[in-house]
Image 1 (cartoon, helix red, strand yellow):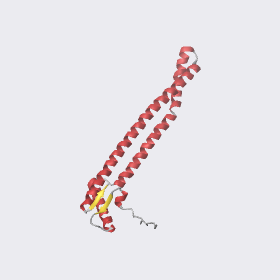
Image 2 (cartoon, one colour):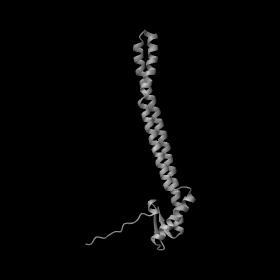
Image 3 (cartoon, helix red, strand yellow):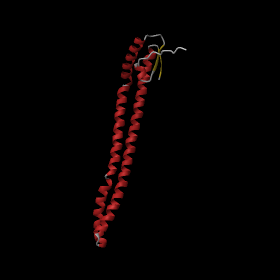
Image 4 (cartoon, one colour):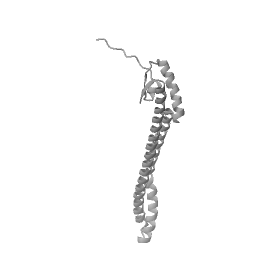
Length: 167
């Protein structure tokens, strides 16, 4: 049995946008390519967004959210040290006043200060992560809406030029 050779299809502008276009009037590939370019420009003008630019902006927003999340996680790492220092100072003062043992008070204060600072930092980091994630989710939703609007405009233009379009 002979194997069928499938010709390699060149990526069209529509295919890079996950839009399927069929030439209803038998338009040639070169004509379809020209019509897609014309409709792309028209859709950018009429939808207000370029899907390639929108995708780049979304990638940047995702990277920024990841950086904010990482920064929040890293901020918890050193939080215990600052709390321990503050706690030791307070503990030394209390220990000196209460029992004439500043060293013991400082040790207790350092431990409590470190625990308190770490818990507080984790809570703040968690809140910061949630906020960054929420902003990234909103940005993704907005970007997807803009891309969908572009695809509608692109499709309308191609349909007006007698192509069958699905996305």
